[in-house]
Image (cartoon, rainbow, N blue to C red):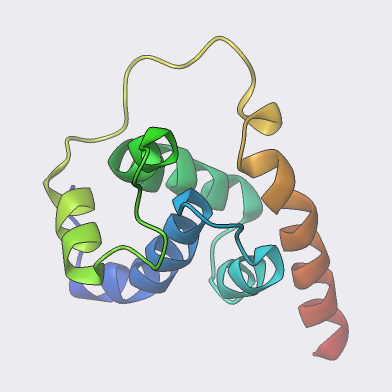
Length: 120
């Protein structure tokens, strides 16, 4: 994937936060949602970033018997996302709205965005 330096600066914290949903430990949903809520991206775009950019790189960790539990190496994560080809052509037959981890993250993200809107 090709991104400008500015785009990378914006995406990097989102990629790192979303990758935590694939660790071999229970995620801190509120912290991940707050990291995403600070971004300029709309909620559907965050879902796309999750499934098209982060998920393809780290999803196998959830199936590993000895998976990463303390956080992915950030340089590895960013490089892996960047060297991947663009969004997958094939989509799974069930709606992304009901897929893990989005179905758990989305309510926290909506709530975090509402709190940020009320605070401003």
